[in-house]
Image 1 (spheres, rainbow, N blue to C red):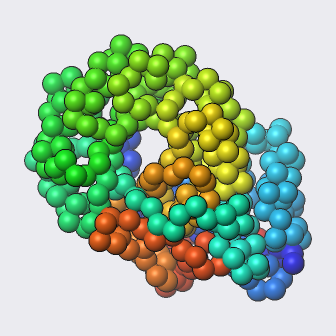
Image 2: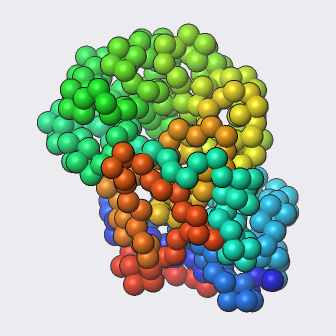
Length: 377
């Protein structure tokens, strides 16, 4: 069964502000859908956390290597793309594009085999998991309103990140965290993401240590990206002394980039992003290393519904998985599929057991958010 077509769809119109200094608008294109078609007529779907123009450029490089390849050998095919593009890729946008292709390949193989991707990844450890609603910090009153709305939608875990946290002073940071805890109560898990991958991040280890102590007082589950993403020594020092778990790794691509962070225990929780770090193939390998080193893994997912579907299959197939990230509210998650994901009464998501990723894109819904399309044959 061979691959005969690849289609790219750049998403626009509902892009969620990421907290970046450049104030992203809804019309910005940050996510690109990938659809692979086999000669048998099966269609696998993937997603890249990268703009359509960058993915299109990468696919122009990759398509001659992918066309006619097997649709049921995702690891070998993805590795071939990666190994064949070292001189023009080795991370960055080329790896992001490979990520979306890899997810689509796993979806294709699952459909061809009549099995969910989780079983093909090694087995099903769980059939549901708790998502955390991922959202930005805000001033106290709008923050309170947003939190109340998120809890009302059924979330029992919430991660707050980026501005204005860490951008003013310690007193403001504590006010925001106190507001969050008072609003959601003690029964909702809270996580805090400082957003240390923002350009020219000014804080170092001493700031992170002090802030970690404050967060621990409010029962925060973990402290994410408190330092610049290349400061592995700072992370290792912080992780050894922090009273709560330290998380990071969302900007890394290729499994090799994750190995020193895991082997050095530079974080308690490693956070690969399946839509840019190499896909399910690389994420499964990273998860294995993390488990062997007793490091927790929680996938990063500033995502689409396809990315979330992939993260759910991965979470089912790894021995220890506590959460998946669920960007909310987000039309790219909640308004693209034939059947949307729904939280149960305990704030959990059922992990699809149907073949492949277990969900399909709704063409009419996707058309609402399509900025551009490109088909490779």
